[in-house]
Amino acid sequence: MKTKYLYFIIVSQIILMIYITLVLWMYIKIESCECKIQTISKRKVLFEYAKQLHDLIDNQNIFISLEGGSLLGAVRHGTIIPWDDDIDFAINEEDVEKVKHIFRKNNIRFSQVRFGLQSSPEEGVFVDFFVYKDNGKHIGYPYNPGYYLYKNEKQNTEWYRLGEYDFKGIRREQVTGYLNRTFGNDWETSVKVNNHTQKANIFYLLHRGNYNLLKQLNIIK
Image 1 (cartoon, helix red, strand yellow):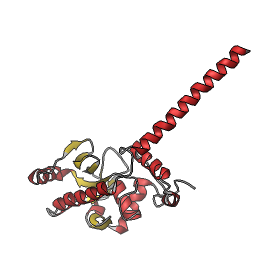
Image 2 (cartoon, helix red, strand yellow; image 1 turned 90 degrees about the vertical axis):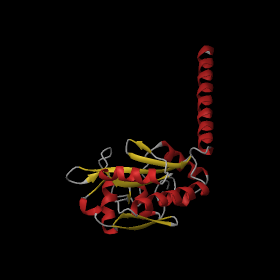
Image 3 (cartoon, rainbow, N blue to C red; image 1 turned 45 degrees about the horizontal axis):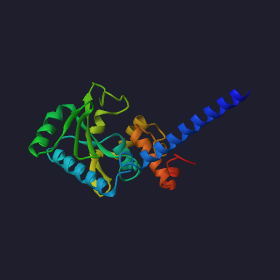
Image 4 (cartoon, rainbow, N blue to C red; image 1 turned 60 degrees about the horizontal axis):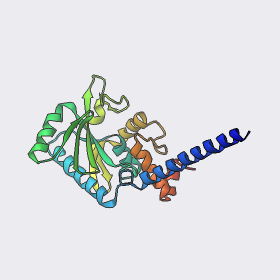
């Protein structure tokens, strides 16, 4: 009997230590720069840098459009999604070499990644260019079947506000259809979390008491 009781005590202590360790680890992660919502200065750099790259491409009459979560943020928030940390654009496959040439000509650092191109002026600031390919039916991002544009959707663009800057995106009468098929019909109130950093950023909003925004988006009741 004493042996069973001692065993129970030992196991309980181990479980308690594991729990405390996990709680401390989550607190440290939430407090770390890696998982925090971008500081005001970082976000300012992101907006300015994205605007610079956008205009370099747009001024050469090359198709560019806000894409994915960045377009969702522009429509739903008037800026990027609060817990997001980058800005995404769509470009055409046939324009990739032209965009690379523009970047090299203007001493813009970039790297070729699975989804297309990525440029970062400093740590923690990323602008992504998703390469859309023409498969006959529509123009889309091959690694995510939900991310695509019908050909008529990319023929005309209009301006969207992100923070203090304007960026091009597909026309507003067509954007609802794009967001519905990309994020689901509940995109106006639902939240899609794509990676651990975004999850941690939501935890950070909770941690800092930003409940009103999270309630509006049905993350918490």
